Amino acid sequence: MHDQPLQKLAQHYRKAFQAEPAVTVFAPGRVEVLGNHTDYNEGFVLSAAIDSGIYFAIAPIPGNTCRLRAADLDAETSFPADNPEVITDAPWAAYSMGVHEGLLAHMPQPIAWQAVFCGTVPRGSGLSSSAAISMATARAICTIADINPDPLDIAKIGQMAEHRFAGVRCGLLDQLSSLCGKAGHLLEIDFRTFDVTPRPLDANTSLLLVNSGTTHTLGDGVYNERRSDCEAATEAFASILSHPVKALRDVSMQEWIDHHAQLPERIAKRAAHVIGENARVQDAANALQQGDIPHFGFLMFESHHSSMVNFENSCTELDQIVQIARQTEGVLGARLSGGGFGGSAILLIQTESAERICASLDAAFQNNLGHACLLQVIHPADGAHVI
Image (cartoon, rainbow, N blue to C red):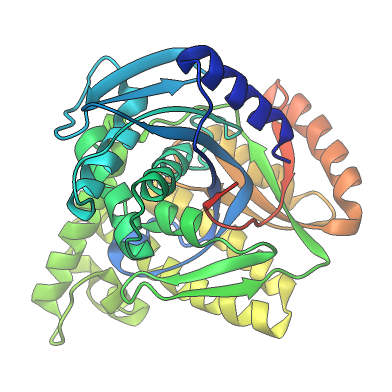
């Protein structure tokens, strides 16, 4: 799995710095199987680290200047080790810079370094290449600086990098999934307690990634707008209900049914999605334990419908992909994955029929969308680690 990108990384590092790296790290991307936009609402998610991600080679160097190269872009930038600032002409470096800044509080003194990274996660595919970069950077810096922050602290540093340096008010789903992944398992994450519980994925089922080819960009405000809508819904229910409401997790669907008419229509729809998603994730986790994979797949279809109708974070291409998947024998469930507005869909399929399903879907996408979609069977993988 690692051979080709590692060779590319090593060659680029030697050419750029005329040296060998001290440490090489792999951090996976993630796929969100259920639990869309529930993380920052203190809810529940089922996700998985995947076997595509970011490779990051690093070594400490004298002085006070960090040098960072993106091999895939053949681009380089630098910043002060003791005081990194946002570099507007190198947005690709924002995540690593933000992580370095966050780790300064854990270092006895600032450490300068030179590093190169490359990836196997397509940018804009909805698989969180940004979190993979952040977590690869964090693991690499922690290793050369000989520091060992708590995984939750590392995830929060990655989150703050997205907030401050990239302008996206994300939750912790992507970072925790990339850090805590376990091969062959989905991760059930409680975003109030931050408990992570691995759930074995049935051996007779596989995850199929369908990249719509529609690149999504969450930094243009649509993600932050949805988060603000959820915050407005939380405030409204807190003023209506007699019990404490800290987040939409604290609102039941029956309470939504009883009181949603008191909210603006758009805010009520956003709340309906999140409240329903939390219930779907818990239902799906039980279905996994009981081996009820058809019900798990049904919940994935229901989740996409809610994203499309209530949260309005889907797009025409993703809707068509899910509709085609629903009509394809051997597909058990399908939905958009990640922030939405483009990117990828995730399908739950029968493992023994994977080749036939891929061929059938490929033909259908060509016929209905007018172009091919990248199809990739993905495997839940271990979290960020030193290679």
